[in-house]
Image 1 (cartoon, rainbow, N blue to C red):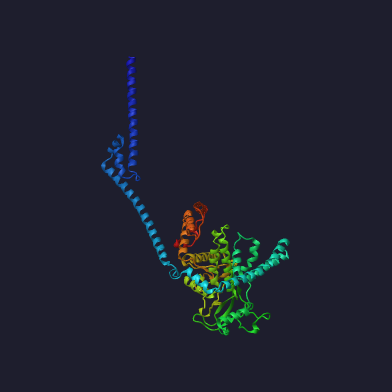
Image 2 (cartoon, helix red, strand yellow):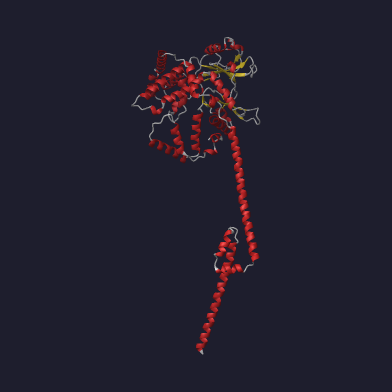
Length: 549
C-alpha cells in the first residue's frame, strides 16, 4: 500500500510539473508574440522587411500572427505606411527648401559676377610698352654714352660731397653717446642731406621707416619725419614754374592763399612775409608741394571762387631721378654679372626697374590727373569714397590744379572718433583696397595716413563717413596675366591648399634657380603656414576677392 501511495504521489508531482512548464512556455510565447507584433509595426521598420521578417520568424510568431484577424493586420499596416509616408514627405520638403535656398544664392552670386567686368585697359593698353615709351620720353640723361657717363659722374660726386660730413659725425656720435650734441647733429644732417639728395632717396627712406623688422627703433623714429613733411622750395621758384606753365598772367585766373594766415590774397607785396616774400605751401612732399588757391575765372565744371589745390613739382627733380636710376641700374647689373657672388637670384636689377616704373610717372603731373580721372570712374556712385577732380585745362607736366578736399587727417579723426566710427572706417578702407586690387587692377600706391582725409557726406542719406584720398601720382597696375596669377595664388590660400599656392608662386616667378628639393620644401613650408593658421579669412574679408577667385 505504501509503495502504491508513493507511486501515485510521484505521478501527481510529475503532472503538476508538466502543467507548470506548459504555463511558463505559454506566457513566454505570448510575450514574444507581443514584442514581435510591436517590432513588425514600428514606423522605423521599412514595410518591405515585414514580409521577410514574418517568413523567417519562429513558430510562436506564426501562432501569434494567426490570432489576429486579417482586417486588424491590414489596418495596422496602413497606419505604419502613413507614418512612414509623412516622414518621407517631411524629409523631401526639407531637401527641396535647401535646394531652393542654394539656387537663390547661386542666382545672387551669378548676378554679382555678371556685374563684374574686366578693366577696359586690359584690352587696349600694353603696360610694358607703355612704361618703356614713357621712360624714354621723360628721360633727361642725354642721347650719347658720353653724356650719360658725365651725368652719372657728376651725380656721384654730388652725393659723395653730401655724405662726406657723415664720415666724421657718425663716429663722434657713436663715441659720445645717443644723447650728445654730436649725435643730434649727425641725425639732423642725415635728414637734411637725404632731402637734398632728391626724391629717390627720400622714397627709399620712407620705405625703410615702415620696416621695424630691419631697422632700429631710433632710426625709424628719427627718419619718420620724412613721412609727412619734407623741405620744400621757395615761392620764387614756384613763380618761375607757374610762368613757364601758364605764362606771366597766371594771376588772372588763380588767387593764392597764404597757409600762415589762412586768408585769400593775391600775390601782393603787402600780403607777403616781410622775411622772404613767400606765400607758404600747405604741404610739401618728395616730388611736389601744394598751395591753396581760388579760381578767379570759372571753368566748365567749377564756378569762379571755387577752392582748388595747386600742386607744383620741385625744380630739377626729373634729372636727379633719371640719373639715380641710371646709376642703380648699372650698379646692380654689374653685381649680378660677377660669377662668384651669385647674386642673380636676388633680382636686384628687376627690383630697380620696378621702382623706376613706379617713380617716374610721379614726375609728370599730367599722369596724376589721368589717375584721378580713372579713380573717379572706378568709384563712381560710391558715397563713402571720393577723389579730387582734376582741372584738365589748368594741368601741365609741372603743375596740377585740382578741387580742394576738406577733411580731417585720418589719424586725428581716429583719436577723437567713437568705436563705431572707427569700425566703419576700417570697413570702408578694407573694401576700398580690395576693390582696387581685385576689381579694378588700379591701386593707390601711397596710402599713408597723410593722404587720407575724413569728412561726412552731407549729400548722402544719413551723412555717412567718407574717405577722401589724395596724392594719386603713385599707382600700381599688374596687367591681366599677373592679376590672374595673384587671384590663383590667393584662391589656393583661401582654400588652405598650401602646396598648390607654393607651386603657383614658383611657377609664376620670373627667375627660379631652385632645385626640385628646394621647391618641395618651399611648398611644404607654405602648407604648414596654412595648417597653422587658425583664423578663418572668409569671416573677415569683403566679398571682392572671393568674387575674383
